[in-house]
Image: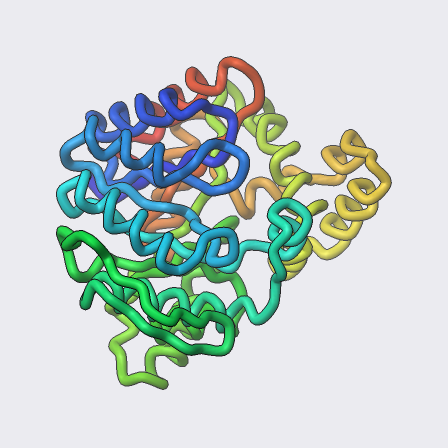
Length: 331
C-alpha cells in the first residue's frame, strides 16, 4: 500500500480520535496526526493512541512553538515516543499571531527564529538529557530530563508554506508539513528545500515532503464541495497567512471576497465566496472514487505522504471521519 496518513483537526472528542487511529491502522494507513488548537490536548490524545495501537506512526500536525516551552515540547515528544515504542513524529510550526496573542496571551515575535531554536533545544535534550541554551528567543539556564528517552533522536517535521520558511525546513527538518497544496506545490517546495539544504550541506532528498489535504467524502461531488466550503472560508477569512496562500494559488479575487465578508461577520457571504475551483485546487473532495483518484494525483505530483485532514461540525463527526478513512484507504 502506498503511504497515506490521516489527520484530525476538529469535531471529534479524544476517545473518537483514538478509535479513528485504530481504524486507520487496521486499514493500513501509515500515520495518524493530531492538530493543536481547541480540540483537546494533542499529546494526551496521542498517548492514548500509542497504547491502543501497535504499528501506525503518530504525529503532531502541528505543535506550536509559542504555546509550550521548548523543554515541555521535548518531554511530551519523548513521552509519546516511549509509549508508542518509537513511532512518534514531532511536527512543529510557528502557528499564527491572530491565535497566539489573543487566545494564549503570549507575545508573538521572530517566529522563524523561535522555531529554529526550539528544534535545537528539543534535539539537545533528546540526545544529551540536559541543555543550557542562550538564543535570540529562548534562554534556558539549565534543564535536564529525569528519565532516559527511548530514542535519542525523534523525526522532526516542520510546517512551511512560503519560500523563507521552506528554505529553513531544508536546513533543519526531517520532513516538511504542507497544507492546502495544489498539484503544482511539490515542485516549488522541492526547489526551496534544495536552497536551504545546500546552505548546510544536506541532501534535500532526505527531507520528506508531506501535505495535509482537507478532505470531504460524500455521495456526490456537489455535496462534498458544500461540506468543504465553511472550513476553507474560515481559514481564508481568519488567517492572513492562509489568505495569502490561497491567493498565490491563483484565487486573488475569491480570497479578497472571503476576507471582506468574514471581516463583516457575514459567514454565509464568506461561504458563498468560496468557489468550487478553490476547493478543487486545494482539497480532496468528492465521491470515494474521486477522492482516491485525487490523492493518487497528489502523490504523482511529488507529495510523498498525502495526509487526509478531517474536520466536522456536529455530533456525527466520528461517523464522517470513519467513512472518509474507509473510503480513502488504499488510495
